[in-house]
Length: 153
Image 1 (cartoon, rainbow, N blue to C red):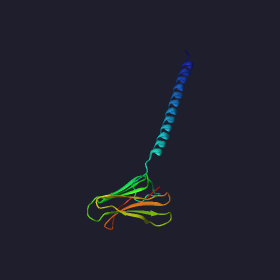
Image 2 (tube, rainbow, N blue to C red):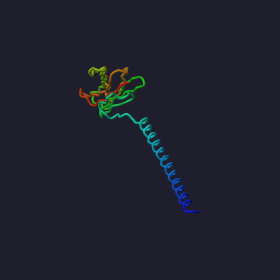
Image 3 (cartoon, rainbow, N blue to C red):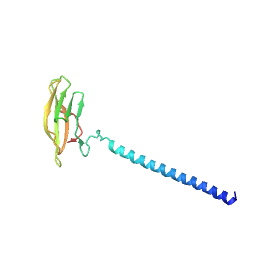
Image 4 (cartoon, helix red, strand yellow):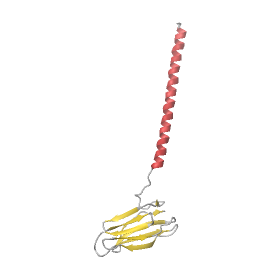
């Protein structure tokens, strides 16, 4: 074999190695881009809505929810639009659950209130419609104990 042929064969081997490296790099890049797209799609489709903010904007999507205090609780049951108010302490004062409503562009006002029997529960059906924001508030002896975040249907 002549020197020129050896150099040519050596160069050919280098070019083949370079071509394989480019192909491998291209495949790794494609795999990385595909993985990033799939990860982003997975994050976007499974990201939970925050339920911890006190006054979310826009209002949280409607579902069963509950507010709790050591003296009682108020629970919203989406299936049938029913509110349940429970008094957990036998003290002759009773816990009062109030449903507040704020129409778009308006102010908050009480739509309905119901007192739970001493150391017992009562139910308050109320249609929660889709326009405006709603909020549950629990009272004892005239004082507000706890309120829910705003929610909407």
